[in-house]
Amino acid sequence: MATIRDGNKAALVVVDVQVGVMAEGWDAPRVIGNVARAVERARAAGTPVVWVQHNDDELPRESPQWQWVPELVPGAGEARIHKRFNSAFEETALEATLAGLGVNHVVLAGAATNWCIRATAYGALDRGYDLTLLKDAHTTGDLVFQDGVKVPAAGVVAELNVVMSWLSYPGRTNAAVTVDEVVLG
Image 1 (cartoon, rainbow, N blue to C red):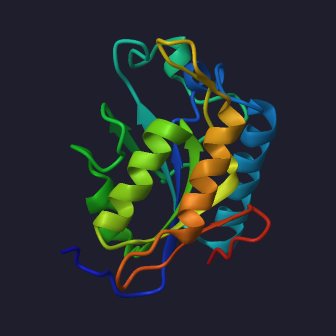
Image 2: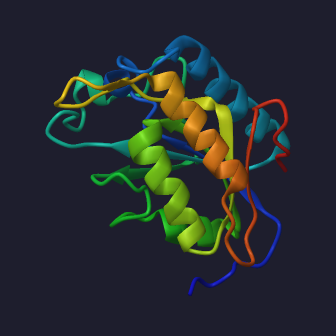
């Protein structure tokens, strides 16, 4: 059973909006713009922004594809978390960072919807955080299975938005809202 986190303090967690990840993202320019707008809104509201950056064999640390997209620049003093697994919570300092900030509510944006965003969303809920997915600020690429079946990225994004609107955990809230609808601060 998860420990429900008391309080009413949010953090915007931006996951994997990196050059190599976004190169395959559906509607990437729009999503990047929405993530940038969410970051601006969080900073203006005094809401902490936490940056999560993936590295693995396909995204080697310090490589050009590992870098943040040019439109997004972590601010001085904003936490940076490095990860090797889909969930931003697994074997990282994310949970300790959020605890140090007094956060009980994760506002989530980034990529890739079906891998790191989904895993991080469930990881947050499993650890007792309230969760808001920014439904217009996450993306992924098309899924193509070995048998040739293709699931378009837009469908993957829409499916997670619906799931995060209907999912229910005891003592926690979760939602999927637009960048313009999210309450920060």
